[in-house]
Length: 75
Figure 1 (tube, rainbow, N blue to C red):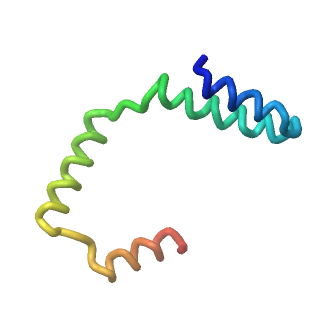
Figure 2 (spheres, helix red, strand yellow):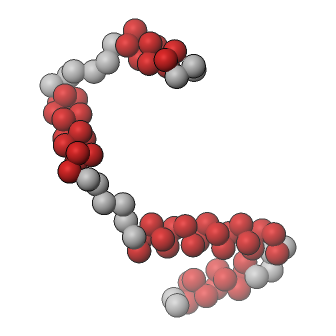
């Protein structure tokens, strides 16, 4: 454990137990993301590449298309 992390843990130990638990869960979530990063599927990677290519070509949704999408989701 680094000195900085150890110092942080000492300060966090002064907080109420409920807040310590909240922060502990946050740290576990952050660590889990670093230890087990999300891996894109081939389909997800292809969809992102297609979206980036469309953006580079200036092919963006119109205001009307965006509004229709929000309506479709009830927003």
